[in-house]
Length: 466
Ligand code: SAH
Ligand code: SF4
Ligand code: F3S
Image 1: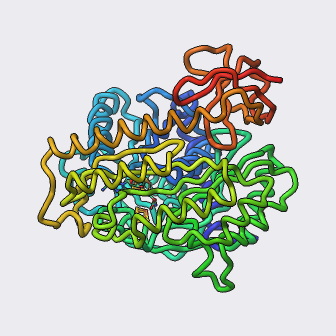
Image 2: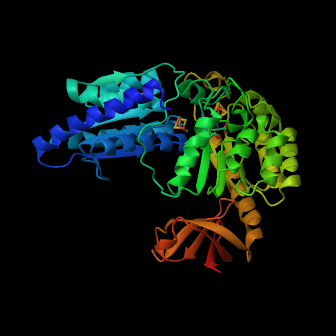
C-alpha cells in the first residue's frame, strides 16, 4: 500500500516526464544526467533513488561532467569530504557557461549545515537546486519546481518523521542491494555530525522491509545489506517494538534470498540474541562490522561511545565463542582531542588482541557544532599523523595475519564485477566480505559458486572455480 506522500511524488514523476519531453523536443536530443555520490552506503542508496527518478523522467545517464543535469549527493562526516565537493563544484562552472541548458543540484548531509548553504549562496551562485536529507523523497517535485520557475530552488527541512520509500530506484547492481531499515541516529558520539544532519532515529515497519526484500528477490537479488547507523537499536521506537534479531529471523525465511549483511552494529547495543541468530542462520554472512573507534577507555568515555575497552574485548569473545571463524571488521578514529601515546598503545593492544579482518582508520576531523570541536586539547597535525601511522601499520599487519587462515579452503563466493586491471578476472566476495579474484567469464556475475582459494595477496585472494 502506498502512503499519501508516495502517491503525490509519483504524480510529480509523471509531471516531470512531460517537462523533460518538451525539453527534448526543443533540443532535438535526449537530456543527460549525472549523479555523483560522496559518503556512506546510505547516501549510495539515496543516489539510486535520485537516478531512478531521473531515468523514469526520461534522462539518459552519462559519466561526463557536461550533462544537462548534474547532482552531487554530499557527505560531511569529515572535512576532506567537504573540500572534495567544493573542488568538484568549482570545476563545473565552465561547463555551465558552455551549455546554457545545464542545471546543477546539491543534496545530502552537507546541505543540512546552514554555514554550507551560506557559502554556496555566496561563492557558488551558479547552483540551481539545493535540498537536504529529510526531503530527498521530494526530488521529482523539486525538479518540477526548478524547471517551471527557471530559478534557484533551496529547500532544506530541519527534520522529518516521514518515511517515503516506494519511489523509482535504479540499482547499481542487479544481484545485490542495500535496504534502509532505519534512518538517523540518537547516539551523539561527541566527534560525529551524523545525528545533526540525519536527524533522530526512526525505524521502518518490518512488514515494509520484508515486502521490499521480497520484491528485490523476485527481481533477481540474492544478497541484501540492511542499512542503518546503528542497526542494533532497530525497532525500539516502533508502535509494536521488535528486536533487530527478530527482524533477521523473519528476513531469513524469505525464499530465494541467499545472503544477508548489515551495517553498522554499535557495540553498546549488540545483544546475545543477535549473536545466537547469526550463529544459527544459513543466510547471514560470517561478518560483522563492529566499530571500535578507540581502544582507550578514557577516550571512549570522552567520545560518548558507552562501552569501554574491556566490554569491547568481552563482546568480541562472546561473538567468537559462538561463531569462531567470523570476520570482524572495524572503524578506528585516531587523534581525538586529548589522545596520548598511552591511549594509542591501548588501541594497538585491542588490535593485537582482536585481530580484525579489516579496519578503516580515520584521522579525527573537527566538525563544527559537535561537543568534541570545543574540547580544549585538540592535537596538532604532526601528532595526529603520528598516531594515525602507528595504528594504520598495526591494523595492516594484523589483518594480513588473520586473513591467511582461508588459504587453501574451498568457499562459496558471489561474483560481483569484472576486475579493473584484468578483464579476464571477476572480483568475487566470500561471506566474510574478503575479496577473491577468479578467472571466469562475465556470465558468472551475480552467481554464487564454490571457489578454491589458491593464493593469498595480503588483503585479497586469487581463486579457481571448483
Ligand atoms: N554509525 C556508525 C558510523 C558512521 S560514520 C558507527 O557508529 O559506527 C563512519 C565512520 O566515520 C565512524 O565509524 C568514524 O570512525 C568516522 N568518523 C565519524 N566522525 C568522524 C570525525 N569527526 N572525524 C573522523 N572520522 C569520523
Ligand atoms: Fe555517528 Fe556515533 Fe551515530 Fe555512528 S553512532 S552515526 S559514530 S553518532
Ligand atoms: Fe557522510 Fe552522511 Fe553518510 S555525513 S557518512 S553521507 S550519513
